[in-house]
Image (cartoon, rainbow, N blue to C red; front, side, top):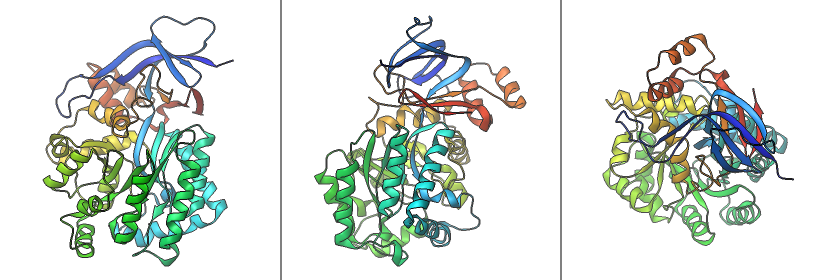
Length: 429
């Protein structure tokens, strides 16, 4: 018999995209004291009256019930180097990232890290992520297995590198294409797994490898592409030297056939107007990673500029450059980054970018990101506040807008009560 569940609380999601900076509640759907009805893994209703006895009831009156967060850029193997000291991007890779990724060749280590990583996402209310594992097949297999065992939506793929990295992390050109094809055929569209062709970034792939990645995208339906672009000024200059024929960093990817509506490009700080026009034309998105950009000192992304040129912007924790898998911390840092530039991002725009906005950019809004009927029941149940100061702040808030912004900015790690994936409770405080 199909399981039926009903969860009572304040349902918070979006019916439309809110304004980026204007202070209003456009698009917000806030349904206080409503029951979210779930049958199997799907949302089948939302109503103020209690359902019948054929539903198992979970009373979380006074709590916020939000769609599970969507993290559009994060590295599973880098949880071992969160908060490492004193390096900018290129030094960071050599000193911290590559040593951590080298350890993923060991199957036991890869499985341990992958399970810890997936559980830690759930512990932060994140139910879907776009993930970089490593060059090792076992890191991909272990990650997909961990997500599948928990029913999670996951987008990931073998990292591609064939130069400018330690020899043990560099691919063999012919063997790599065979491995990628095997992984795609085994995992893509199996359950809730989607495969992403994953060149780390242009400097670590030869033109031949980038073209191979483009062939895979063209051949297999529904693949994603994820990579980094224009994160750091020294990196941009390096790309210019390696690809002198390209107009820009982004143009390297376009020439290889890597831009499309399922392309996720992390950072995008140092792009120009022509680049943003190209992103809009192809329907590609920028995964804004504010915590990492601040911590590594890469620069300040201009969200308004991207928004004005109709480029989709989502949010990534970018662990381990980022210091937490918490999307609430990521939203807070996104606000800070824009504030430094004299812009004030709407609290609702932050929440939208981590839920329905990300789902829409990933072409998954008919599956996740909101409480629309028929969507998969990925959700998180949050207390409005647990710490005394946060409780006081919530008490004096004048409206929903102010309360939600205070929830983002002054929340406590203990606020999360439960995380549900595909209609099942997968994490509980």
